[in-house]
Length: 101
Image: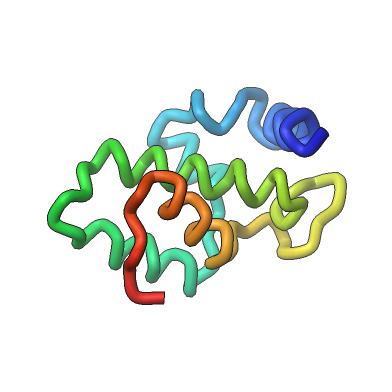
């Protein structure tokens, strides 16, 4: 159910799934809270972090937020911003934890 709701929210917000966003669309549609952005910047400095991985982690964090209804237009709880907890989940799914939390 959460995956379906997340997909519906993505299509309403940007007309496509998060995974299909190009870099310009990511800047327009994937809004990240300052604390979460700081975590992404820290992750970018990891020696084994590839640029494409960071892009995919950011997309996944938005998807996690959509699934948690934290950035979902149906049930807005955070004004559409990806939160730190969403980035932590995405980093964990990519095997990129620990970064300084």
